[in-house]
Structure formats: C-alpha cells, structure tokens
Length: 562
Ligand code: MAN
Image 1: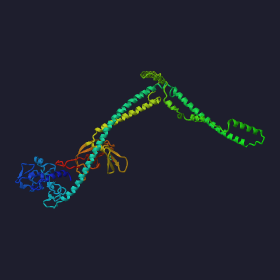
Image 2: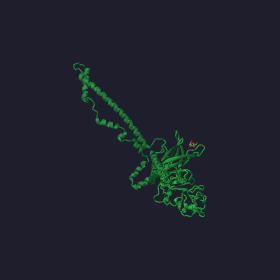
Image 3: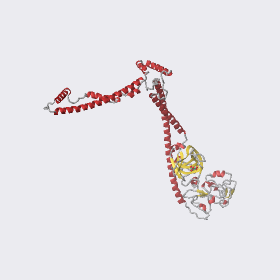
Image 4: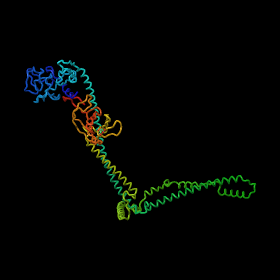
C-alpha cells in the first residue's frame, strides 16, 4: 500500500467537506481553488488565469497542471507528494511540479485517495487506490464500485492491526516496568555494596592489626632453633609426655592380655583338680594320690575355687586404657596452646594493676622486638615454612577479607557504570538484556541475544561463529517499503544496535552486525543480510521500540499506530 496510509488518513477528515461543487478529480482540500465561476487561476502560478470552461477540458493549460484535476492531460508533470500541503504548493513559484497530488477518488464506503494522473483513463481499474473505479470515467473499461467489499476487508485488517498495536504497546509498557525494576535493583545493589565495602574495610583493618599482633607475639617463639625441633622446651616436653603415655598404654594392654590368659588357664586347672577330688577312690591306699588330695584341700581352704577379680581395679584399668582424648588429655591442644618460653615472662604481669600491666606489656614487647632486631631472638619470615600456624591463619583471614573487599569494589564499579549506560528510551532495552531470538537463513541459524552478541550457527552442526559483541545504540534513518504484514522497517528514524569485534573473517575484517529495530508485537528476526563480506545487517521486530502516535489532525482521538 506504499506510503499512502498517512495520506488516506488525512483525506478522511477533508472528505467530510462539501464535494458537490468540485470539478472532477479535485480533493476537498483543493476545493477553494475551484470556487470561481468565470475564471480559474492556476494554483502555483497565480498570474495565469484561464476561463473556467478550460478546467478538465483534457488540455494542459496551467504550468502546474491544476486546470486538469480530472484528466491525464497534465500527467507528464512531476507528481506532487501526497504529503505536500496545498497552501505551500500555492505559494511555490516552481511550476514544473504538479500542484495536485493526483486524481481524487471519493471511495465512498472506504477511505478517499489520490490516484496518479497517469492512471486516469488508462484502461486499468486501480482498485488499490481507487476502489470506486471513478478514475476510469471515460468508459474504456468498466470499473464497478468495489469500495464496500474492499473497505470491509480493510477494516478487518485494520482492526487486527490496531489490536496488534495495542498488544505491542502493552508489552512495551511491561518492558519499561521491568526495566525500572532492574534499574532499582542495581541502585539497591550499589547501596548494599557501599555498606558492605565499609564493613570489609573495617574488617581488613582489624585483620591487619590482628596479623601484626600475631606476628609480634609469635616472633619470639621460634628461637634460633637450628636443631629443627618444632616448638620450644615445653613443646618438646609435651611431645615426650605423649610418647611415654602411648608406650605405657601399649605395655599395660599387653600385660592385661597376659593376665586374662593366665586367669583362664587357672580356671581350667582348678576344674580338672576339682573333678579329680570328687572322683578319686579313697580305698586305694596310694600315698601320692593322698598327698595330692590333701594339697588341693589346703589350696581350697586358703584361696577357694575360682578367681574373684577386684572389680574396682578392673574398672580403673578400663579407664586407664582408654585413648588420651577420652580421658581429657588432648595433646594436640597442648601443642596448639604451646607458649613460647618468653611468654612465661609475661605471666607475672597478670598480677599488676591494668594500667601498669599495659605499660609493662608494651615495654616487654618492645624489648622482644629489639632482641629480634639484634638477632638474639629469631623472627619467622612471613609465609615461610617456619611461620607459625597462628600467623598463617591470621594472614589467610586477612587475604580473604582483602579479596572480598576487592570483589565488592569491582561490583560497585560495574553497577555504577551500568546505571550510566544507554539502554534506549525509558531505559527499555535493559529489560531485553540476554533475551535471545533466532531465525534460519540459508545454511545457518542466526541468533541475536539482545545487548550481548549475534551468532551464526551452522545448521549441519559445528562451532558457532560470533558475529559481534554489543557495543552501543545508535539512531539511523531508513527508507524501506513496509510489507503488507507490517514486519519491516518502513521509513523514518530507527534504533540500531551495533555489534563489533566478532570472529575474524578470513581475508576480511572482524565480523560485525548492525541490528535495526522496528515495532512489532513479538521479539523476532525478520531479515538477515550479509551486506558485504562478514558485515551483517539484521532487521528485527520488538515491542520495545513501539510508540503511541497520533494520527494526522492531532486531535485527542488519534489512533495508536505500529
Ligand atoms: C563463513 C560465514 C560467512 C562468511 C564467510 C567468510 O562462511 O561466516 O557469512 O562470509 O565465512 O569467509
């Protein structure tokens, strides 16, 4: 339908003006030029006056063709754009351009329209522009009025178009709301990060202090011990104590095993003798047997049969044989808490009043540092194998806190930059970030992930080719015919997303893509071209760029247009 729609809409209003006295082919907005009765003044050439009878006499008298609004006599003149207002045409002194936009078709039941003068009486019914067939008035062909049917069909489509426009605008509103929510989220994050950074800075300070305190405290511990023995004398003593206890426990376990075995052998022996005592024949006068019986009876009298172990001792033994830890003796704990010998020096300060204690404490620390500085006490270099676990732990805690602080600062920088980025009108593209759409074309599937990248994916499989990473939003002017389904760029200013620095093209540049956006109900790729080697252009529809526009006339009842 070319660019006629705007003109059609304009004409809709003008059509209501009276049409009765207008010569054939004159539109209502030009009626005023044809109001005289005797003479006609050419619209763009007011010096040229002709008798009114020469209007529409099929002879081109006026240089601007205005005397032939209903014939093709002046069709050779350059046509006037349907958008050009009659008044500006009237004031123009250039007269090679026609003063009129074409032959006016009333199109009752549909929308009035202008058809080019070249089409008047050319033997073809131009229903697309002139559904009432009035441009073929000479009768070369008979064009019956089809405005009812065409108008009905047009209104049906127009209704669908309006509905789609309404939906698209609603979707855009949702995107704008979502974008605002995401923006607020970034602002909140910035605030939280500010607090987190303050906390992390304090933590780092504390941990720096803790590390240097620990280093000072631990510095005197590792006394120039070339023997390599870990810890000081107390540590060595603890180690000896642990080993000795282990040995004793092992021995005791073994002795207890022997005892239990002997006890069981004794029980068996007593059983044998007891049986012997019951079963021997006293009538045999065997002296040896008699002695044995007597000895057994004495044994029973002295000890009784069966052993009765001291249960308290048994229990003690059980306890003693338990692992040290179960007995509350945690050697590891002792070695962790191990104090250096010089720490003994400090213990007496516990008996001093607090103010004096702090003073003495600081002097002692200074003294120890002096001893270290003079090589009398050894200091353990940071991170060395000699460094004590306490220092290493303190250092690790500080490193972790520093890393957290750095992460927070980087996040704050990213978030602050994000707030300053261009996300299009109303920040709307923020809501599309990371949303991907794709379409097949030739041997590839092309993908666009909004504000991220474009990709070329071979349908047969294989690696994806990056066609560029999103860099910025620009505005460009396009002038294209809008397809009948509305899925195209049309003409005017459009948002374009630039994607650069994609995969390098053999014998060419790094791949890049310009994504040009136009209003649509859905996010979709309409077209993809490779304009030159590895330079791509995508035409993409999205509700994000739809706008509420007023139709010509500018009244408050203006239509929403896609
Ligand atoms: C691939 C595709 C094409 C491109 C050539 C360049 O085949 O990325 O779009 O033109 O490489 O060699």
